[in-house]
Amino acid sequence: MLGYSTIGTNNLVTSAAFYDELLALVGGKQMMGLDHIKFYGTDAGGAMLAICTPADGAEQSCGGGQMIAIPGGSPEGAEALYNKAIELGATDAGAPGQRLPFFYGSYVRDQDGNKLCFYHMTAA
Image 1 (tube, rainbow, N blue to C red):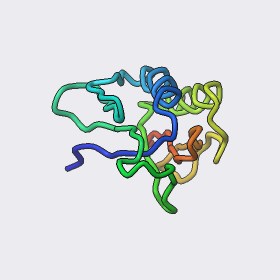
Image 2 (image 1 turned 60 degrees about the vertical axis):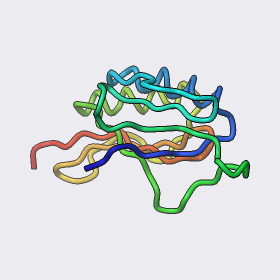
Image 3 (image 1 turned 120 degrees about the vertical axis):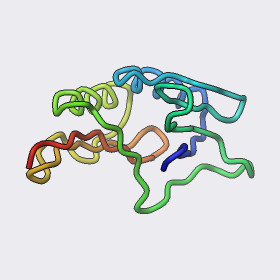
């Protein structure tokens, strides 16, 4: 159902460095890139996350209620993504932990303020 989702950045170089390292933990890599946008995925034809500078030249801004959720594959994987993001300069928006009987998650904001969730669905 999802082809790709795009989030904005004010500095494509630093944002690409952040996502290159972070998404490598879950097998993600740059699948395609231009001077204003980079697409990340795990395989050709699969869902992707794109980072880009705004097409209108305006400053990037975050939308209230918007968040990108990235599966960690396990609670430990979700925590590893959280720790890597913090190491790369993200800010904490919710430390790793069991949120619901079936949902383990953690939250950060990248250098542009985009909210990311690293999660694992557990047995209820």
